[in-house]
Image: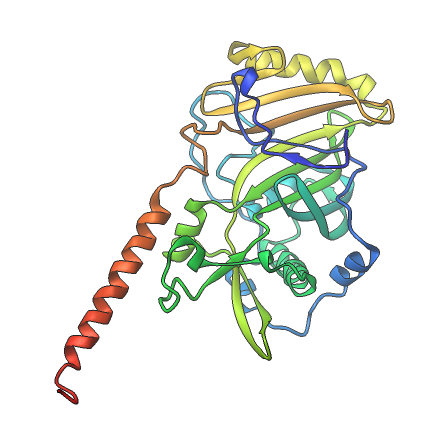
Length: 342
């Protein structure tokens, strides 16, 4: 394994294409001790009322049935929000730490980590996750000197003086939530969910269909400073189970045979299973320390019917905003043509 986290690797040669990631249980993205300390001592003095929009429980809504009997691990689902994933992970058992990282492409950086001990009953609410993610990302933005950390909606074509054009989103468009130390068939695994923003998630946010995380940041332009509300609209991309633990030698054969027994009819080549909507890949090998590992990835196929990135609605919404803006300008001018005439 390399230290770079590879997400959205497309297995074109396998006949299966879906977003997936790879990481060692022991690896975390490079981050300075200063960043880690800062994330632990976050901006608690700032108010984020949006946090209260998320329930103080861990209930998961009803989700559509899978298209076939090819399903994800346990009850994880392609429509999971980061909050659903958070609650479902707590339904497993094990102890260790969970880690939140953000990034773009294959580059991630640490923003938050805490210890956990799960007994199979969810006890940490969605609101709690909203608080820690909001404050961690808020601090990340404030500490970052990279203007790309904030993406105004004007880059998608929305006029600057429209309601949509005055909004912005968090520019690090990928987030992972990893639980290190969950037990699967008696062996410690890391369970990771990969999330990103998409045209579809932006549309749902801008039209009010879904409420994403939002936070307030102070920006400085020249000598002036102002506060901006930033949103983090995310969708599920994939999940991964990974272990390089020594106990794997006792459970590896049963893990592989269980997958083969359940999904053998969907196999397209060794270690690859797909029903054209979702896919599972199994990768085995030795890491850079010579330890055996297994990586099992689940996700919707890219360009498939469940691909969350497939949406043509954002350009349409921008076009509607432009047309509405022009119509409002014309109406305003027509209403004032009688003032101070030639």
